[in-house]
Image (spheres, rainbow, N blue to C red):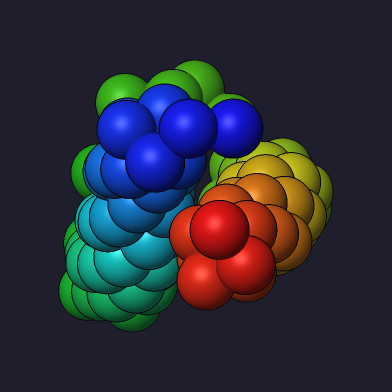
Length: 92
């Protein structure tokens, strides 16, 4: 490959790696903030959640844990993608 091609590919991969790490950071912050809000609302106003969702808190906890586990798996996939892109960027 020519030097300009390597430089262009390196710049593209660096941008992708930066975007992946930024997306991961936003995802983790969003996960933490929403979890804190959900726990606060469940603790201080459980009847509000029951009124808004029409579901008892015990049923809603199981559903919430399921969705948070899926989101954590997605974020773990982002860690793998960001690590791969960072390694590839350094290898270029």
